[in-house]
Image 1 (cartoon, helix red, strand yellow):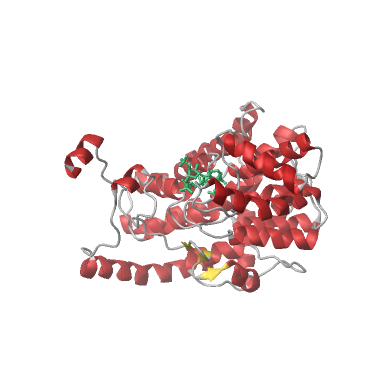
Image 2 (cartoon, rainbow, N blue to C red):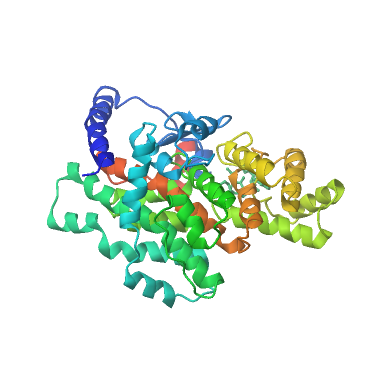
Length: 432
Ligand code: HAX
């Protein structure tokens, strides 16, 4: 057995005891109330989910197992000669709660290399999907197709104790994470690069190998991939991709069903697809305004977008009330590696201009940029110009967090999720 699985096993019993004693001693205590506005308004702010892997503060941003992004960029192991944290490290941290050593991370890299090969039937399925199908649809289909190999589903069918379900879930999660970069890269090369897949290079870590299979071997892009895959990995439990994965998993659907569903949620323009929308909007405005626009031109363009009843993609957030630290981390990367990039200059100007306009506009509760306002600029700079593919990068990363949570859901024996819904008639009765 791998030492990661061993380590996880030692964490599960104490955590079960903590949760059981909380439910036994304080189970009736209320931690949230729900107003009518919240019931109609996307359940915003209602504390009704428990997710261990990360927590989001409106002003400080995301903390993964208690660590913020600057701390993680310093503490997580890096590739030889590299400056950015390895995504294998964030997986270890999110799953176990502990900062990994270099050896811990190496073990995960090797484990994922062993499990990473794509079966022939998956290649056939992916090849049979029309090329003009959105890459996220192809990605979700690829994930779902692998369900036939679910260890969890097989063990469940044979009969397994509820308390042991985390073990086959762990196996499915490791198999899936191992394969996701190869699935994503296969789709990319199929659609955009003449059907010419690039085999993995097993001398590389997970993020660098992903960059390699996409077809960009530049060291800086590998660093970007590592950072990108860390930054997008988790954003507590209530966002659409995390919540969907958790919800579907709660029916004891396996990791393939659950992640595929979560990816379908990530594919929405108000969630992960905002990364493609943000860059598409920037490129369109540069095209219409003839290159890097003046601030006055930008102001007019932003107002025109708002007055047309559209959102400014990459700005606003359901929870955050400050600049997203994931935006800041990408900005720092850009300042270091591509300060003169023209699109980055526009992104910078938008950072100066959009928040004031959104405040004046008076609708968005958070006028600041989120993660999606910046990521496309970086990918585009290194040659990934196929904007429709951007959410797939997000998806590969997001799988780290939501799949880790799925293992914990089963370890803690969480039940099927089933909130109560009410009708407008019922609400009207209550307010009489
Ligand atoms: N531009 C224009 N209007 C905006 C806005 C923006 N960037 N952000 C919010 N608003 C509007 C909303 O559309 C809403 O208008 P209505 O009252 O007419 O419905 C109003 O302001 C209040 O919305 P809110 O409470 O501030 O925001 P929500 O919690 O409802 O939604 C969103 C949060 C992220 C979906 C929203 O800010 C948005 O649409 N942003 C643009 C799309 C985007 O960047 N999405 C990615 C978010 C990060 C993420 O999940 N990444 O995966």
